[in-house]
Length: 84
Image (cartoon, rainbow, N blue to C red; front, side):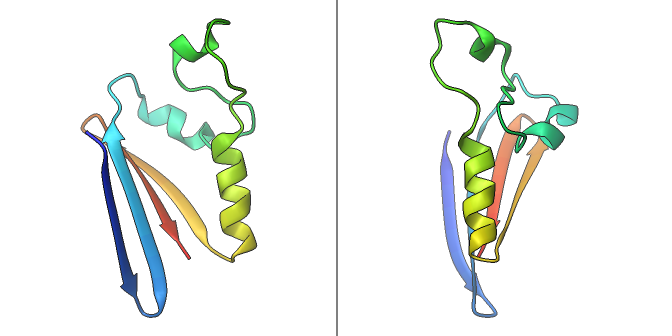
């Protein structure tokens, strides 16, 4: 189940996106923003397209706006939080 939230706090914008992520391991989230990293084993299959650059690019774009992006994983739910 995908959830999105957006709010303002002290003139900064916070965006959170959460989704079920049953195949995840807490140890892997440290590498999510590494370029070309693919977390799911199924993504390493050649029939799946993509290069694993999306989160790396997102992190770079957020930093251009002097923001921060974080990822957390709890109870099979992954959450990305962006502060701008």
